[in-house]
Image 1 (cartoon, rainbow, N blue to C red):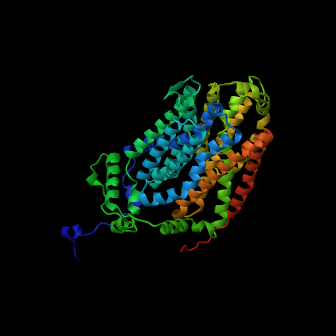
Image 2 (spheres, helix red, strand yellow):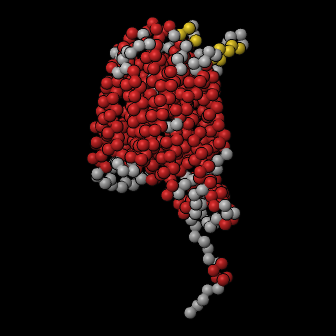
Length: 514
């Protein structure tokens, strides 16, 4: 019998570890909890950018004397920016990394939001909101992916759900900020009156402060170890794993049991491929990423899911973004009128709320918005609990029916009923949006998941732009028509989700992507 010596044992090469093995050895502790806390301001930045036009509208409609179509263009500018830059961000994320792009994207978003508070012309405000959308698109799509790559399989799904719940807190925080700032009688003039700083402009600047805070926190974060491994930067990835391990366990970094990492390419290959890329290569790489969605078996379910989120986000955001302005009309009516009665009978009263270019915004507008936001925040956590026991498709069906019925009767409601229906509708449609993204992610292989989520969100944003352009036109025809249109989209979603459920029962055949 041959007995191995200690020298023989020391010569045994350690087995290279993949990402899942390496992250599982870091444990769960202080580092992961700190990441989740730092992530909270990050989740707020996108909603602060996209929703700010909703809260300033009661003020800026007086200042700029906006038409309904101009109001729609202000809402849609952010989403046009997101749609137009989606594929560019997708490529940059795969090429340049997570943490760096998160930082620069959020920083640029904060700058655009701050500059929006200085503009004196409406078209400049629209342009800046467009670029705010361009800057926000990448961080919005990347944030959940970035966070998940610091957790093992045991905690990953739970953490991403919790992060989604925290992001809904923005529905409460932003109207709270608006409540304290926009109703204030603020009007500073500089440069002989050429630069005016008033209540709604200060609100935008304060929103940008939250965005800058998120950028600062992202700057202090480590790069995703999964990305570092994917591009062959093993030494840097190992350094991050050791740091996570040390902070979670209290042990020195040198005691981390993994010493060699494994990925598909070497560090030398990665560094050689990074410096330059031609336009042709960029287009070719983009086509390779989206090509599977134009081939069976993914073409039909992907197209239906894109259509589903298109209609879901259209109904949610077209309604949500117009709530503060709708509440302003209701409050201006000073009576127990239905939604449409307020719209048709208070034109003089509502216009009288404008004193020159200064809007006398009632704080009650934002109190109602906070109530709706609190409903969204609470209902999201309830939905997280329900998904443990009920299929996501059935939850979506139930909420679509409930939403369709609620929005159908909405124009004839008044008082507390209007507020309750508003809160329920925004809450359940926000949950439905998350459910569709989750359905899309689970319908494709892991290798296609990132692009799938990015594409489905892009189609959802197109729906928001479409909704905010057509609803003002419909509103001028009839007050009830916009709500009936939203109800039609809600019930159309039922047809699409039922078809998707039928397709899901058939196991897709694999295809080869060349």
